[in-house]
Length: 183
Image 1: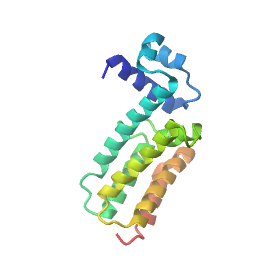
Image 2: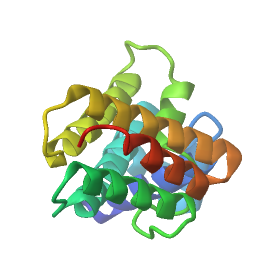
Image 3: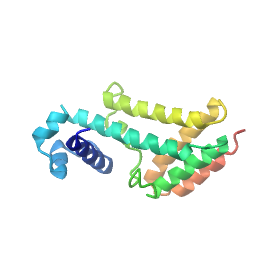
C-alpha cells in the first residue's frame, strides 16, 4: 500500500477514534498528517471513503487482536475468560495494539451514522457479525444461546466501561454470570 495513503488512514483513524467522526473535518486530517489536500483526494474521493478505509483498518486490527486472544482456548469457559480478561485489559489501556480505550469505534461510528442503509452503518454491522463469527469459531459447543449471551454481554461491557470508566469490575461480573451456562 502507498505510504501516504496508509499514513492518511492511520491519521484519520486516530483522530476519528479519539474525537468522533463528525467533529473531525478533512482539513484537520490534512493538517495533522502534513499531506496535501490534492494527495488526500487522489487516494480518497470523499470523506466517506476515508471513513470506510479507517473502519477497515480498525476492523483488521481488532479482529487480529481478538483471534490472538482466543487462540488455543480449550473450553467454552476458557473462551469466556480469555475474552473478558482481554477486554478488561483494553478498558485499562493495557492493550497497546488497540490503543487507549475510547469505547468501540464501530459502536461510536454507527451512532454518528444512524441511517441503516448507509455504507458506513452497514460496515459497522458487518464488523460486529465478523466478531461474533470469531467468538463462535472458538467455542466448543454450538449453543447459540451461549454465543448470544457472550456477544450481548461483550457489547454491554464495552459501552458500560466507556461510560463508567470501571471496566475491570464489569468484565468480572460478565465472567461470573456466564459461568451459569452449561459449558
